[in-house]
Image 1 (cartoon, helix red, strand yellow):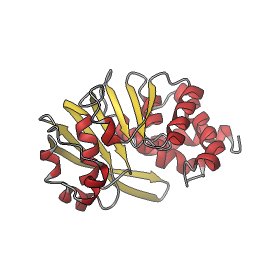
Image 2 (cartoon, rainbow, N blue to C red):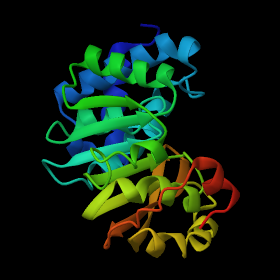
Image 3 (cartoon, one colour):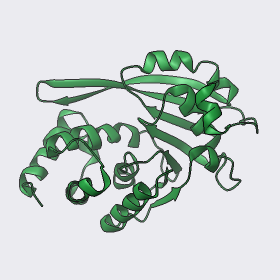
Image 4 (cartoon, rainbow, N blue to C red):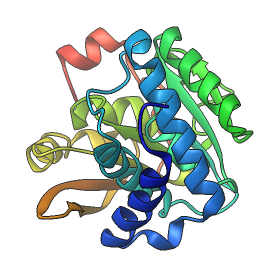
Length: 245
């Protein structure tokens, strides 16, 4: 472990408190995040997991950021993380919310293998992974419209992301997208896609991350699933990208 464990424990409490999420931590969760940080930094060169290597910034940008989405998930629900990549938000959600099940979906076996390995090392029995393209997963009868929540972080622009995620979301469920600075423009571009796929925009909520004098904001876009997705969707990925809804 190439960082100070006691300093990490102290700083994670301080940073979570500063961002109003201290109530989501306890001793066991702190130890899991400590171990996850060690795993991620140790395996980073092999898997290219994160460009952020400072523990305080990992806490803020990966763990606090994911806390904002974890607290919106109701207990006992089934969650799909589309494009789970380095395990965000899959692994933090699983740590924060042992009362939910989460499936991390990614098209790259190297990434899903890492997420599975990290989950085992952390004793997270509520995590499973699937190596598949999201548009293929959404055509499977075992997965289509089976998830109470579908989440995605930094995967694609909203018109594309909606076609990948809304078909996986069950009626009455929610699709939550963690987006960046172009979210308002992307949301405008997705205004046809959302109802076409069976969704309805519920809200776009601004999340502000604080670390000392530094602040950064981005929205969480929440879409409710109000009607079944037509069987024609999702289309093959090349068509989704070439001609977004």
